[in-house]
Image 1 (cartoon, rainbow, N blue to C red):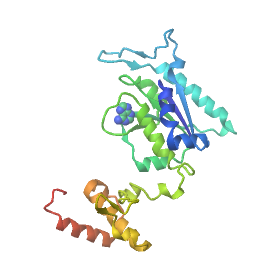
Image 2: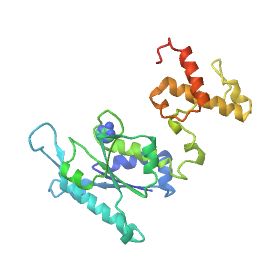
Image 3: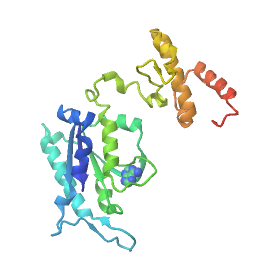
Image 4: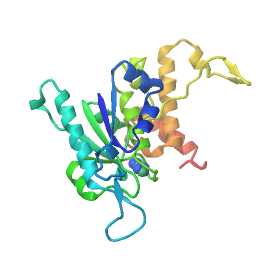
Amino acid sequence: MNFHILTLFPDMIMQGLNTSITGRAIDKRIIKVNPVNIRDFSNDKHSRVDDYPYGGGAGMVMQAEPVYKAYDYLLNSIKQSKENPNDFQKPKVIYVTPQGSIFHQTKAQELAKEEDLIFLCGHYEGIDERVLDMIVTDYISIGDYVLTGGELPAMVMIDAISRLIPGVLNNEVSSEFESLQDNLLEYPQYTRPEVFMGQRVPEVLLSGHHAKVDAWRREQSILRTYERRPDLLEKAPLTEKERKFLAQYHAQNKNSDIE
Ligand code: ADE
């Protein structure tokens, strides 16, 4: 998978992704991270890429031309890198913006199937709308808060997508059984020692009885989701028995502040 990032801060992208698990995946050539500096495509003698907004208002706006030129250069270089440039299909261009739809695990899974992805990172008050209309295919936000630029959101998405690509995680199964799988949160985890400051590891986990461990974990996932993220439960594929169990639990805990 090739991640291409149109950015004013290529070092920030590389410093963020060149470490830990994504760094190893880059070394192993399972993923490629290719930042393209939009500033290199400025026509201005001071390499400026922003200007005042038409109509007035606070802040500066990134100009259409350097963004378009950077995109055009990138698109051509991706095309030329393909064995068969004539069959080339334009990759998705994701503009990371608080105005986009919210990124989630299902979106990460969908994007992990692509061969190339282009992320466009804005700064200042945004990017001239005309170039966005021309090149952007997806508007995505990482949450309802405003950051200073698109680099961190792009890195968040690249991290979430990368770990779904076979070979990136050491343990192939570990991205399958995890938080948010089937809209359920992950069960609690424990490691040695058996007793920590008087607190014992749940007995069932020491039993060696796999079916019992699985049942306990499933129950914990459901309860944890009910308590921490009840909004997810509606979409979780629970069995009839599990729904009854949850209804009972709900009835017993009605008077607590978890509703
Ligand atoms: N740029 C600034 N804030 C953002 C956010 N919350 N998500 C995506 N891109 C952003």
